[in-house]
Amino acid sequence: MKKRYSKVLTTVLLLVLTQHAVAQQIEVLDSSIVKDNFFKSKAVRISAVPALLLAGSAATWGIRKDVREFRNRYLPTFRYHYDDYLQYAPLATVFALNGAGVKGKHKMGRALVSYAFSAVIMASVVNTVKYTAKVERPDGSTRNSFPSGHTANSFMNATFLHKEYGQFRSPLYSVGAYTAATATAVGRELNNRHWISDVLAGAGIGVLSTEVGYVIADKIFKEHGEHIKLNNNPVPVNLKPSFIELRLGYAEALSKDLTDKNSDLFAKTGFNFGLEGAWFFSKNVGIGGEFAFSSFPMNDDQLDFEDPDIQTVSDGFYTQPMGIRYIHVGPYFSIPLAKNWFITGKLNAGTSAGAQGEVILNIKEGYQDLFLGKELPYFRYKPESAFSWSAGLGIQKQIKRNLGVKAYLSYFDSDNDFTVAIIDQINSSGNYTFKNQGMEKVKFNHITFGLGLTAYLW
Image (cartoon, rainbow, N blue to C red; front, side, top):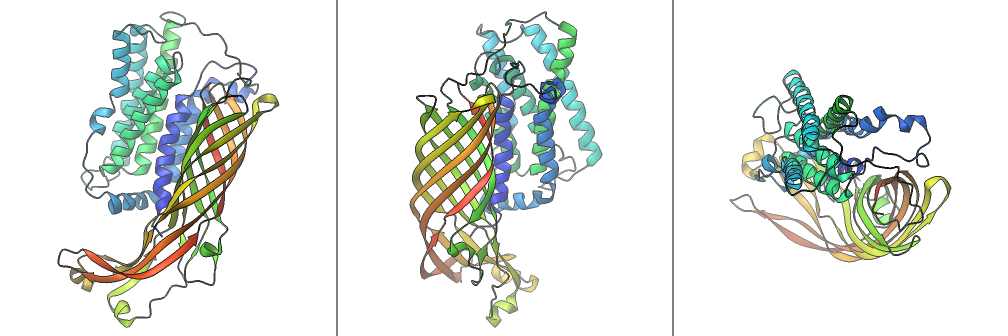
């Protein structure tokens, strides 16, 4: 069992999702890809991803302290300020490529005008909101946390590299740009300088600022200052659909080990987050792998500690979610249909490990000095690795040349041994020792269903 594990996964999912969603945003669309006027609208194309990020910021506002608690639990002393420098890496890459003679979409003069408009818009929006909202930072240092300026700057720079080189030379430039921007955003959280809602809003502002900056520059320069004239790119449905994909969905446990409501603890509906990719050696069959997590919050309403000593020092407890992480490889399948739809499938196997978790007592104020803290881990589950396998089906729609969305359903199965231990002693330094209570086998079979975002690598 493990506390709020799914919520930090949500953080990683929304930030890394941006990397792929924006990285593959191609402005030049073929009429055979999108026939709906709504999707052909330039306003929709430039605002869809920022709107998703800003909606994510609003949606995570209520859990921002929970995500921070996860950080404080696992990385309380993280102090690596790479984010102060990494935010500029995509911008430096544009200058380096230009200096090396690698031409982007525009001549450097026009590109810099686009960037200047973007920077002014980004800085104006970020600082106006910062000093109006006056949200306190997680570390309590100042009241200018929302939105994250570092994140806004990093995603503005990443979108600059994406538009100059990722769209017109290789999507790998975009992947690298948004990877650096995502790492910057995660660093702001790990360094305890921002909440999750801050970085999501900052990412949305950064992307939108660059998009608007380019719209303004396009109005000024029109056709002047361009290096490359693109033709429409047909949908390559007959090519090999190699891909990278991010997915997020619900996880529903099937095993009685997790769902037995007669036990003291049982699982509720959880979350699944995964990153997967495959290389196709034909248009129908490929080989690939996935790295994924499933996490199940636990219902502990029936759990009761009758020991009078516990009731004396504690006024409650909470239980960390039960989780599983796994790495699988195997064959992947794709069947192209009409109107750019695909049926997808996979059959994978590999290794999995349950996530260590605890039942934690809340210590009463009068006993916190005695126990050297406000909380005391009373019961612990330590997992062992085990063989696991998964199978899945999906229905996928290609919405741009390099971008698709998928609705998926998958099944996962593993049997993991858990060492069960109870607290035994606390030394003068506040370190705990546990007494082994035996071994339990937990069957983790569950189904997951949700949505995936696919970056095609034609």
